[in-house]
Image (cartoon, rainbow, N blue to C red; front, top):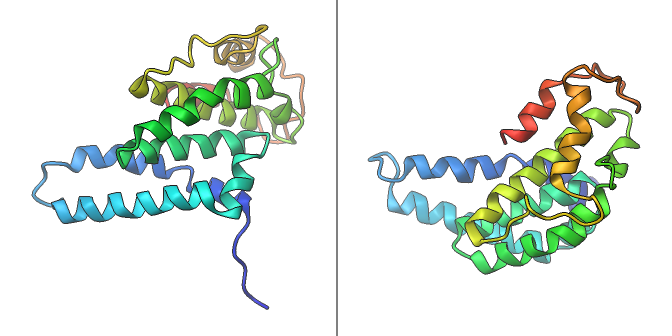
Length: 191
C-alpha cells in the first residue's frame, strides 16, 4: 500500500528533457561545467535511455498509439544521440514512418488519435510538435522524415491540415474545450 512503480503514461512528464540535452551543448567549454559534470549527465541519460527501452513502463509507452508514443520516440532518439549511440537513434527514426506517420496521420492530414480527444486542437499540435522534432533529429543520422509520404500521409500534410484553423480561415470541426490558440501550431513547428 502507498507504493507505485509508476505508469507508462508518466513518461510524458519527462518530454521536456530533450531540451535539457540540447542546452547542455551551450555549457561545454564553460569553466562552470566540468568534464565530471558532463560525464555524470551522460551516465544518467544512458541509464534512463536503457530504462525507457527495457522497462515495462517504457515498452508500454512505446506501444501506445497517440502523442505519447511520438514523444517517447523523441526522448529515445534525443538521449541516444546525446550518449553517442546513433545506431539506436537511426533505428527508432527508421521505424517512424510506419509506426507513427502511417498510423497517426490520415491522408487528409488529420490525426485520428488526437482529434478524438476533448482538446483535439491542442493534442493535434502537440503530436505534430513531436513529429517535427523527430524530423529535425533525423537530420543527424541521415533519416529524412520531412520527405516521407505514403498515400497522402505525411508530416507536411498534417501541417497543411492545421494551417487554416491556426490562421482563422476555418472553424475547427472537432471538440476543443479550451480556447483554440493558433500559436500552438507555430510552437509545434519551431520546436
